[in-house]
Image 1 (tube, rainbow, N blue to C red):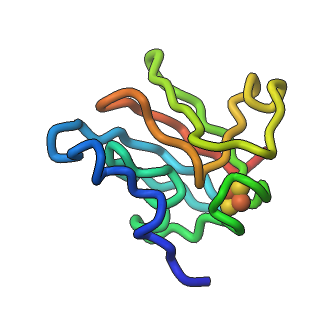
Image 2 (cartoon, rainbow, N blue to C red):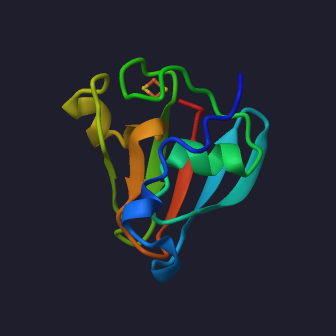
Image 3 (cartoon, rainbow, N blue to C red):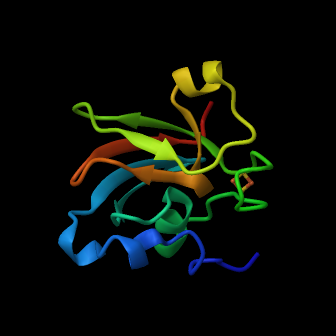
Length: 116
Ligand code: FES
């Protein structure tokens, strides 16, 4: 599958050079990797840009193929731009759609897991 990196980058509206990137420690199958999560970039594209084989399907918040768990450190927060898959209980359990997730916290640190 090709990397749809240009999609999901909201940096054109946020001037990312002025915002501090977040970081994520990603647990995926038998690997762990620390990646930069630029401000205004959706989590899926940050992982793909880092060379991770992150799963995805529609990239529109409609299929759930990119579903993962994002646990924030130190009160960092995220939000989904669009979600037509997860219910309030999933979200309360830190589930998110990577293709729709932005960090709200400059310099925020997060653990991302596909092991659930
Ligand atoms: S890839 Fe379909 S919801 Fe994220």
